[in-house]
Image 1 (cartoon, rainbow, N blue to C red):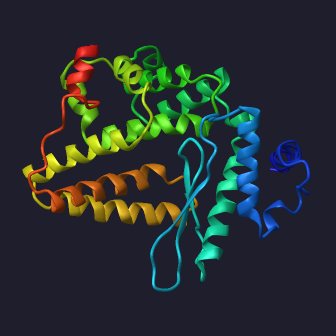
Image 2 (tube, rainbow, N blue to C red):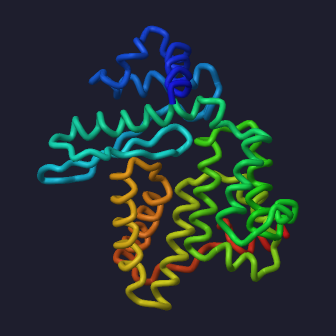
Length: 282
């Protein structure tokens, strides 16, 4: 633990040279420090060079407790985990959680190396019914995970998280299962979706998937949204990275809005990131 704290102080000295490492997390101006940290990273072109904006979002509320989210360049999202009596306090608390995670992301142990991959695969094997031999077989879950890690060698965990979130969402909405039924290999699926970022277009296509599910099973959208909101709140209070849970909420809310605004919402268009496109790739 002492070594980790010393490493964090060293990182603060490098990235925020005019700040006192001992006072960083006690400073009420943590919001500006988080912005300063990512601007410095952008200038160094060390991470997400095309995205340099830290975005805050406060949930509408007539009174406390208040909730605030902060999204970092690259898409990682964090929120306040304390009970905050003002919007400013919630914003500062969210920024503090994000700053701590941003600094931890700079540690050598948070970068994908051969040693990191080996340890991660061993942990995955220990938590499943797989074996280490599966790591060399991309048709297995362990093998696909191994392939994803190797394809992102040298990246930090926050950089890797965006790709992981995409696949978490594809698994959640049933797309990965459908792709397996088309005989697409896991390697092909990973290679295909690694070309894309999680943007408004992808969210819209996933929302259309859920609109179709709602037509088949009325009420499933509201049920999933309630679950997503509960998961998001629990993860926020635990100080976890929130993007997967927040994206689920956004996609489901978008689907419900489209249904209410246009009950005859059409099926996904031909140019979407769809099974058809990937089958063509296959």
